[in-house]
Image 1 (cartoon, rainbow, N blue to C red):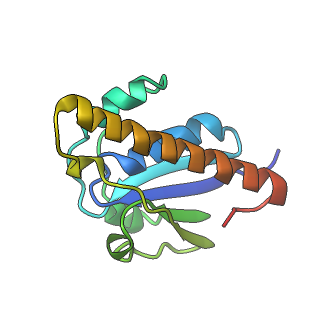
Image 2: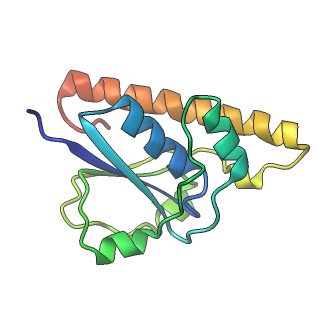
Image 3: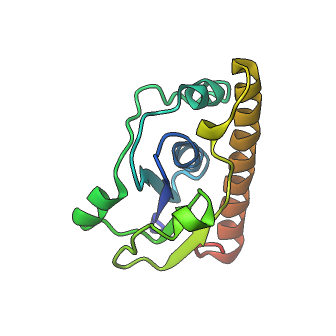
Length: 150
């Protein structure tokens, strides 16, 4: 059996983008990948994201936000750490021991969206779909190269 590639997704609050990326990779990348997510400043789970992910058959309602520095203190290691926030915030992410790759994927923050509830949901769906596509590309690149993709 091939080894499992461990991936950590990090954003500011672990309330939206990193939660979506974790869920998509765990669903679509199994059994080759195991993903976790955490935040630099853990906040509250974004309920609009929960609704948008439910449309894709993924229930995040029982998820909690996690602290990336707690993972570091626990001595966790990852094959790849992917920041999914803006670059400046991503630079605040700690370096994990044994980490072989660090990637940055910039996605808009659903917590910053303004407008009606329907407008916020529509924009969150756009981010959700962009993350899902990036995860598909990540998995496909891994299948071709046999290593953690760029």
